[in-house]
Length: 77
Image 1 (cartoon, rainbow, N blue to C red):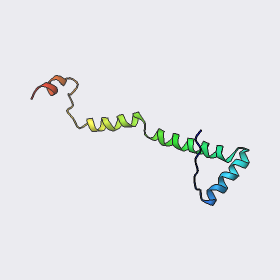
Image 2 (image 1 turned 60 degrees about the vertical axis):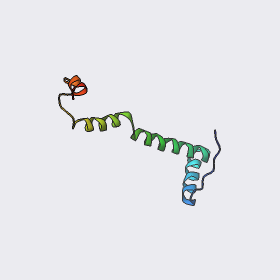
Image 3 (image 1 turned 120 degrees about the horizontal axis):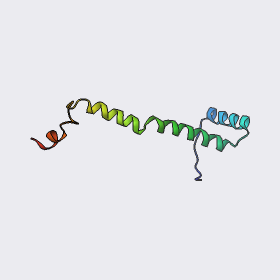
Image 4 (image 1 turned 180 degrees about the horizontal axis):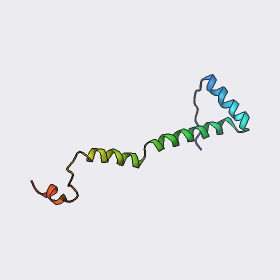
């Protein structure tokens, strides 16, 4: 693990301390758990499926017969 320091507002620190006491865990573990959940949520928001859907919407503006006339579009002028 890498040690780091973060400045927290008092209310946030108090909330973390209360959760740690309630769950009988170290405050550092509570912070790690919350960070992991938040990062996982952000990562799920940007996945390959959503990127492919965006690309398909861009491609919808192209020719409708592209798959059948691929050579025509690639090699004819």
